[in-house]
Every structure is written in C-alpha cells, then in structure tokens.
Length: 464
Image (spheres, rainbow, N blue to C red):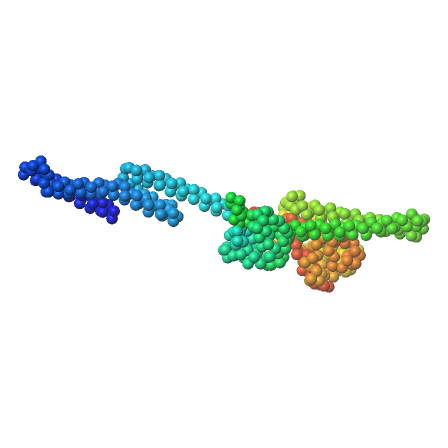
C-alpha cells in the first residue's frame, strides 16, 4: 500500500513539472518580452509546485515511510514481540537506524532467551530440592513454591500462586515468620510444628528480598527435621534401655560378690551357688554387650557386607547345629525344608547371625515337646527364608514393635528366657542391609512365622 502511495505522489509531481516546462517553452517560443507575463508566472508556479511535489514524494519514500515502519517495529517490541525486524530500507539515515534497531532487537531476544533458560534451570534446581521453598511478594502473597513445599502442605503448586501464604499453609507460625522478615528486613529463624496434613517438625529460615534497599518480597526455606528428632529419640532410648539392661546383671554380680566377701565364700552351700550365679550374670552381661556390638555393626548397613551366592541348605544346617543343644534340652524338634541346589545371595556371617537369632528366639518361646522348622524357597526377585515355630505366639498389636531395640512383649518372661531384647532388631537391620526385609505372622498360642527376604544378585538366573 505504501509503495503505491509514494509512486502516485511522484507521478503527480512529475506531471506538474512537465506541464510547467511546456508552458514556459510555449511562452518563450512566441517571443515574450523581458517582462514575465502572467502565463509565464503560472508556468513558473506550476513547475515549482511540481518540483516541490517531487521532493515531497522522495522524502516520503526515503524517510517518512521507513520511519513509519520503524515506529511500528518499536511498538511491537514494546509489546514483547522481539522477533519483528525491518528490511529493505533505502540507503540513508533511516537505513542506519533500521540496522541499529534490528541489532538491538536481536540482542534483546538473545538476552531474554538466556534469562528464560537460566530461570528454567534455577526453577528445576528448586523443584528438586529436598527442602521446602516458598517465595512471596511484599504483601505476603505466594509467588513460587517448589514440589517439596507443595507435598509438605498438601497443596497444588498452581493453586498457591497469588494467594496469601497463611491461606495456602494454614500455619500461623510460618506466616508470622515471613511477616517479620518483610517488616524488619532481616533474616528470621524459628522451629515450626506442622500438624496438617501430618505432624512434622520443621527448621525454618526466612530471608527478605531487596531491590535498592527496598524490601520487595521474601523467600522461606523449610528443613524437615522430624526424622532427625526421631533418631535422637531412638538414640536416647537406646542409651537408657542399654543402661538399664546392663545395670541388672552388673548389680547382681556386685551383690553376690559382696555376699562372698562378707563370708558366704566359706559357706559350703551358699558359696558355690553364689559363684555360679556370678558366672551366669557375667554371661548375660557378655551376651548383652555382644548383641550391642553386633547391632552397631549391622546398623552401618551394606558397607561392611560381602554378599555372595551361597548354598541355602548349607547355611541353614550350620545355623541349626548351633541351636540343637538348646532344642534337645526342651525336647523340641528342629527341622529344615530346603531344596537342594537353592542358592541365596547374602553375606555369609550376617546370614548366620540372622538365622541363629530367629532360631534361638523360636526355641526359647516354644514349649517343651514343640517343633521349629526352617523353610526356604525361591520367589520372584530373590529368596525367602521362614522360621516357623509352635510357640506362645505374639499378639497382633505387638507385632509392629517387636523389631525395636530392647522391646519386649512380656518383660518378665523374656528375662526368664535370657533374651536381651536385641535379637529381632539385629535381624531386621541385616535383612534391610541386604536390600530385603523381614516380617512376622502370628497369633497368641498359635506359634509364629518370621520371614526374611533376600534379593537376588542382578542378572543371577539361578536365584530367580
């Protein structure tokens, strides 16, 4: 449209100039005097007007039209369209201006692409963080939450944006922490308790975001310390329980030794009896310490294991040989049901510890004349060993806790059997260190079945 307009202007200007020149030539040919006639003036005026029209048309083509195109380009750039460009500009000032504007648009487009790439990179990092992250504006409205934050507060990331933080989290303490950071412009720290959707303990840090000294928002970082608190509680309970368990035989040894010092050593009846009790208490003390050392070792996980492919029947026979004397003393039948050729991928020493602990427990809690059996069979992905007894059984409500350290279903009965309360905890840690697990099915007076699963070696067809 624009090229047609300037060409029409050019044609009209040229026509006027030609008409003026023709009239002037006609006047000159008829011998006009030195004075300019009215017709000559008209010819001069028409020629001047044609020349002016030509100049205007040229300017419109070479300056006005390119400037109009450059103006439209600038308008589109201001609206965010950085892909627009101006081409085919005639040589001159506007041509140089078009080149500079195109170069500026190219540069801005590159800078914006880099900024978007960096933004996506940082957003991906924040999304993958295990700590919860939230960013708010200066009014406390949510601008960004990462995936951990959304899961922690059970909220969809897209639904949080633009809403007040307190409405999103339903947690007044967190909102108050963020508000203090916005108002005071300083880093705020606190420990928060979360009750919804689940109870968690959080270590929170909130930092203000500033621009030229003005607070424009804040970012909060929430670190879940629930598991750490639980570990500390378990450690404290372990120390307390271990101290209690060790104190009992130690106190007995001290009391018996003092009795011997007081003259019981010369008593032909009490002296030997007290000495035997000291030996038994010392044995119990040694057993507790051995189990504690074993538990400490297996809690370190797979780093100390050297798993390899083992004959399942040989491992079970070796464990049975260690518990048969105690089983014969109670007239308990101990058998195994393992198919020849079955192999299990495990650390040999740890597997023995697991089997002996399970078998020892089964013998201790099975009445005289009962039976204990070890069954083994291949399962998808690995191998299962099950120790089945006809003992007193375990109440259903106690089954989830029997793998805890020092936990006893019946403390008086367990101490009478010589249990340290650590055997099943050792079993669980050994199974988990191999990447497997242990479970129990039982009912009171109906015996119990403890099942340990050991994964197969990757690509080991024999264990499938």
